[in-house]
Amino acid sequence: MVFSRPFPSYSAIAKGAVAALLAGFVVACSSGGGLYGPIQGDNRPHSGVDRARGMPVQGIDVARYQENIDFRTAFQSGIHFVFMKATEGKDYLDPNFRTNWVRARDAGMPRGAYHFMTWCSLASEQAAWFVANVPNDPDALPPVLDLEWNNHSSCKNKPSRADALEKIRLMLDVMERHTGKLPLIYTDMNFHRDVLEGEYFPNAFWLRSTAAEPHERYSNRTWTFWQWTQTGVVRGVRGEVDRNAYYGDQNDWLTFLQTGCDPRAIAALAPSGRCQAAK
Image (cartoon, rainbow, N blue to C red):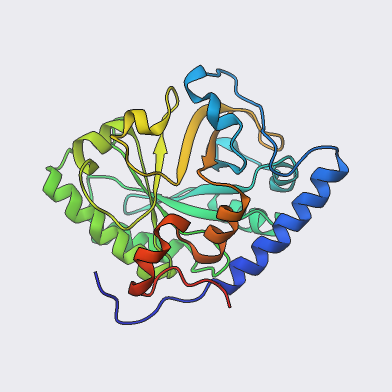
């Protein structure tokens, strides 16, 4: 895909990221911890994801179920990012999205919005709904397209692989044009096996794997984020919460915040006008 115009730079997110990292470092050091130390907290730990607990850049993803989140406390305790549910299908807006969006920003925590794709409405309708409800904030993380079968909803449609891919690519294109950032793809093992396996996307992947490392479940798909438990425990969050890890170290993370791209993919993506670091 060739784009006729360059995307916006990441100056705002880069400046915010540096300030957030420095603030977090001061708080962590004053409390005797380390900003990038391993973080414990899982109500049902599984040995298959032991490595995730020691990875240096940790995050959470949230929706209305987590209710009133204290993002400042979570950030100061070592959570470095949050992805939050924004929209679903063509007409659902998470009732906590707007509050979460503002509170996470005010706490200095890098945050991004995700759209849950459904298979009972047009991709164009869903794209329009996302654009209408998710701000184009220059300081936000790239948006996320959540791709799963809708097994727990009233929508039981299962499009063909070709139809699903067409809808996905349309949605990704609109999300990118709206935000100026290359969207992430979140998925689980079943949907990846049925639709995404073997398909090329320039997008970074966020993979769910709560009993094994992602390469064991996703045919060695390169991943940027790993959702490693749904029974996480985090200060500032009531009840259980999904826990996630970023693949790299703090330098890789800062590069991601500056560019919106996985550092390993920047050389290949930069000619299309993406991954523009702050000057």
